Image (cartoon, rainbow, N blue to C red; front, top):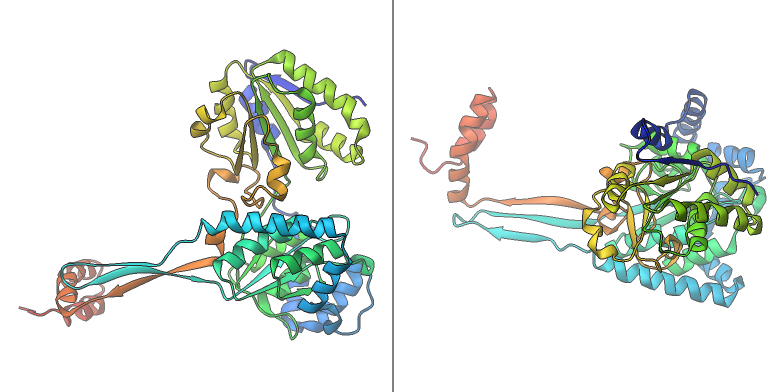
Amino acid sequence: MKLNIRQFSSKDEGFRKDLDQLLSWESVSDASVQKSVEEIVNRVRTEGDAALVELTNRFDRRSVQTAAELVIEADELAKAASRVDGAIVEALQKAAERVKSYHERQIQPSWQYEESTGTVLGQQITPLDRVGVYVPGGKAAYPSSVLMNVMPAKVAGVAEIVMVVPTPDNVVNDIVLAAAHVAGVDRVITVGGAQAVAALAYGTETVPKVDKIVGPGNIYVATAKRMVFGACGIDMIAGPSEILVVSDGQSNPDWIAMDLFSQAEHDEDAQSILISTDAEFIEKVHASMERQIEEMSRKEIIKTSLEGRGALIHVGSMEEAIEVANIVAAEHLELSIENPEEWVGKIRHAGAIFMGRYTPEALGDYCAGPNHVLPTSGTARFSSPLGVYDFQKRSSIIYCSHEGASELAKIASPLARGESLEAHAVSAEFRMIDKG
């Protein structure tokens, strides 16, 4: 199959403009989506279960009578796991253990220290009480997303985890439910879309209000998450999946072609980019892609993705490759080079860095251990992978002895009066040992 993937070189005039155009992605919804989501969110917020049932029946082509029919409790999750092939359940268990082990290293302790005056300062770290996890349903059913969103919440100590997943036409994915069982989800609500986000954010008679909503979804889900932020927390507004491969030209071109496919097959808007110092290698990868795509079950999606948002970029040096990689700030960055440890420290912006020729991004998606919920669309410049820290909050601890309060008041009082906040100043001065 012929693949018309754009190719350009860092030596080209206007390279940076072409690169910026390639990377541009408008993640916000259009006016019609915004209006639709706003109506859905407001209905669920005001009508509760009644709206949730009506909207679920309409959008997912179901015929439930009550919201109770949407709930799958923990014992039913265990039954679903028993219906799944044993090898898959075992793989889920092993992946869950690896994800758990990695995230346990992210746990931060509370801390305090005491000053000479007896003043004690510190930070208390506590888990969120209840978290909602959104998991796509229908044709986009990802049990791996269940593990990646739930396990760090469990490690953080979240007391209750509620998962929502749409089941269009009453099609329930037992592997997704098995993943929920393995991860320790407390209950599953079979709803999706903006209505599921609204139910989690505001609560209904059946769906409990959560402190934070995490997990991927379509443009309606992303728009709803942005809309409810403030009523609860959210993880991020994610764009299409993306991969950037940096190669020195010594890797197997068939491997690199397949690594690029691994993101392109997600959806038509996914982005796959190759940067290499070897122009001949780029042509080999291109030829391999045209050959191997015929074997792919999702070849039409891959073709649309690669031709619409993919690119093969030639650069003059590895230093230049790293510079471009930092501009891209990719969700997934593969350093398919001889000595990746020599270059990884120069990477400033990337969601996850896969080092060496034997570390495909696909392993990170399922079982390596680090989280696969990563910043997209260049947001790796200021965002991080989902982790234990996303399910915890920090409270400052301040204790003042009389002596300590007196010393601090000598600082606070003039600052407060400088801001014309007299009550602040007097409140501090009352604690001074010698007001004279």
